[in-house]
Length: 162
Image (cartoon, rainbow, N blue to C red; front, side, top):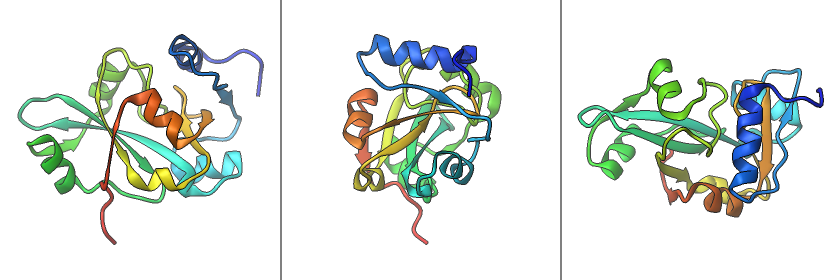
């Protein structure tokens, strides 16, 4: 972990500061690309990882961000009902175009343009959560209440039932 953040992680740190949040982005040598890797890297439970997943409306082609607990999968039928059209997981080039970040490092905020955001209600049960910060090696911690303020997202039951 160095003092100098990679450019994408620095972009997230700068965006957080500009939005008035005191969070500190940390870069780790271990990968944080998956929820289990991220949890292992920071020493928390997988449920405390806030995965930022970008979907694409099949008709409108609009981006939709779903921030889901690391232990959950997004129920695309529930998401379709919420946004009023079928959705599909966005491809890598679409994600980068809409957020400014690559898959595996998409933060919950600081994107190149505003994105409709839905938040998994299960994240609210956690005291502390960890979110991606621009690269597959960067994260920052925050509370669920801070996530809501940061994203202006809507809390919903979005998880796929097991």
